[in-house]
Image 1 (cartoon, rainbow, N blue to C red):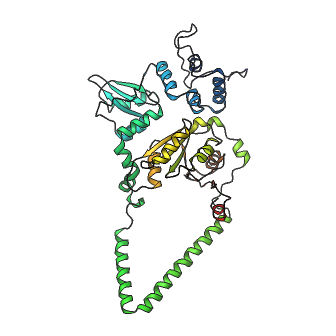
Image 2 (cartoon, rainbow, N blue to C red):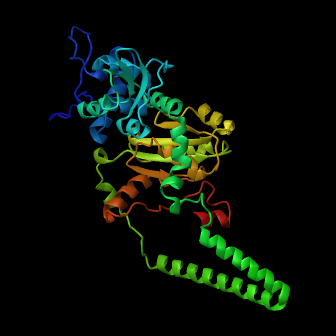
Length: 398
């Protein structure tokens, strides 16, 4: 926006392209070109530029998030503008070569083809010199970059790195941090103690059944009392306000929308087609720049009903569908692990299908983290249920 309040049509890196209305190449802004090619109307371009002036971000991301343009159209123009190729879909994938999964993820690059003289790599954003230098350490031929939309790159990952993604979501924690994994339910010491307790109980029931039954009852009563005391302590500490972060209207007003980070929302779903329309409608109303949202609906591979219901709703492009391959355990944590692999957000939140978060909750969380010391990694936000007023139990949940 200039000093006269006029919004200028720019792409984040001030790149221009075109050959229209008498302009030479590299003179026509991307937005104007989209209007000339009928991808945008002048009114849509003006609205997108106004949003860009307020929230920052790239014009292409904004018009896609608003539903003004399809990603394939934007990336076709960008490929011409940047003088790069576009990924041909479906890709040929005529090479067995692939980058190590962690390297490919860090660089945002996937090897898709090669011939005797060069290698083609799919990227969402053109790699800068530093990332290209790192890439050449793993590839021994000249590299040609092909631009891919986020959807296309996700599909390439599913095709090329399926085994690595399954390992990441199911086995990595157990292999690298077995002490923190539920894959190993009991330690050797716990197994030994458990066997000894069973032997003692069996012996006691055989020799002194009345006394053994009394001892078991006393132990169970003691456990019950200890659990009750723990709940009382938790209620007391909660009433004292320990660990509670208050976010005021002034805190929210102080947030700059240009500085808001990308926020990933993970929603694990299973057999929940009936509540999906209400969930999506609520998520669309969240008070957050839409081009900075990365909403990932997580579907189990065998839950075609919910997946088809989601497709029928045709959500905006910042909502992506992630199909979790069938494997065991079939749990929400595994689905969330899978969804996290390509999450783009600096912040991540997990919602159930029944949740109806406050519309400004994402901003409240960012304001809360700014008040907390740097070592804090998680905050628990208020729960709102879609049927909170239905009965006493749902009111307690909320």
